[in-house]
Length: 139
Image 1: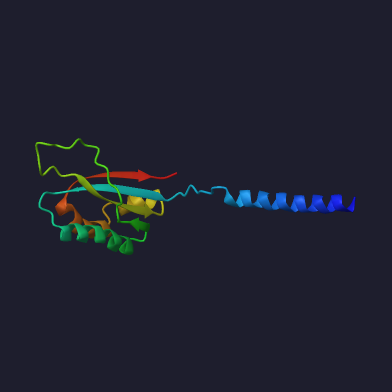
Image 2: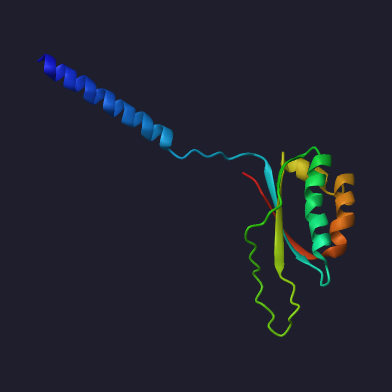
């Protein structure tokens, strides 16, 4: 009988440990109320790599000067261009860059439009941008 309780206690301990492990291993995720501002960009023909770098680096400077921006991502790993390639135009500009800004709230994003921080960055960005696609996402 003593042996039974010993085995039962060990088995109970093992099962409890496994149960805690399963709970800890469960995927946890959040649904933040911040706003993700995703932008993909096509540059004008003749834009230099230095100009592109200045515009992309400008995203970080913008975030430093506008308090409503929490985080930025500027190194695009993959950018898909949904348009079919114009094989008749060897200079067909493609979407080649993307960046993301995380705003604290929808209000922070709305206040960003036409802010002095945006206007300063636009002085570098807009002259070389052919077009961009913007997506604002929140929960």
